[in-house]
Amino acid sequence: MILAAGKSTRMKSDTPKVLHKVAGLPVLRWVVNAAEALNPDEVVAVVGHGADEVRKKFTDDKLTFVNQSPQLGTGHAVMQAAPQLKGFKGDVLVLAGDVPLLRHDTLTRLLKNHRDSKAKATVLTAKLPDPRGYGRIVRDTSGRVLRIVEQKDLSAEHAEIEEFNSGTYVFDAAALLKRLDKLTTNNAQKEYYLTDVIGLLCQGGQHVGATLTDAVEVQGINTRKDLALCDVAARSGILEDLMLNRGVTVLDPGNTYIEAGVEIGRDTIVYPSTVIHSGVVIGERCEIGPFAHIRGGTKVGNDCKIGAFVETKNAIYGDGAKSGHLAYMGDVTLGKNVNIGAGSIVANYDGKKKHKTQIGDGAFIGCGTVLVAPVKVGKNAQTGANTVVPRGKDVPDDTIVVGAPARVLRKKTSGE
Image (cartoon, rainbow, N blue to C red; front, side, top):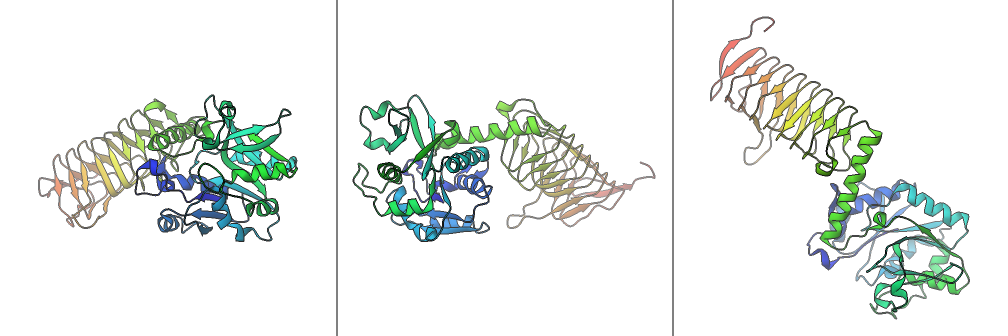
């Protein structure tokens, strides 16, 4: 169950909080992916603020959506999904829709600890010297969990506790359902707290467990600053995976921006100040950057180069293709061993629609060339410096064109 109904006024945004992006993906996408990786029987998403927008974004996922309106707290959110739990005899993992950095091994460890200890509930916790804003884990002298006290209800004594609630729990479904009806709004926020279920279970003599994890992993998002912190942490993990597990050289990780969902082959080098967006695939032994901007839909073959101040979008590079400097390649297919000269662009937009360009194997595009899409440049064709190839005026194979507009200079000789 993913709780994703909150508005979070501190974000100061018309966009639902869970649709803001971390490393190129919506915050909620990270949580949904983490949930689905556990192979659950069902994933229930409780939505509220911007519900229609959230539903639309996740139409391809097999989610059961439940609406929470008005939003009266986390306990109230779970109450709305209670009908989905009737008759279910397993465990319910409750995730916060605004906590995107939870790792798969942490969630599997949480579930294992819960089942091994035969607990009725297990809460994922972390520690900070000053966990301001989070509910605190209250334990007895033997270390057993007694209850969770929310930030606004803290006493001076509880405020000194370093262990805090991450907002992630596992419940025995039947035990959870029995306690939901007992929740009240007798608290500082006048809301139904899901955390009160923990106290009710303990009062009834039921065992409640706790699993400790790293504080960075459970960072929630309530402000734009939180969003930026999560983005940095997520991208750091992506870069680490590329360097340690994929054989990619990242020369300056602190100045390289690679989003989630990027594939890069071994022995590729990524130079500083490069930005690579989600959905990009780059092959082996390539050179990318510096100051390259690789946008979604770009697919790069092996032994390619995308150099300084080159931007690509929906661009396909055949093996050995190169665009070394100051180029824009949008909605274009480059064949094998194509060379794009400095300052060349594909003019893919006519003011109303985007159009495609095709450049054949071995073509040489001279410096400052403008290819006005839609247009085709044939195999082994060549454009002179500052050539403008108008839309629809295709360049035949083995032909050199020059000028603005382009005119045929000559056919290439055999072997040229």
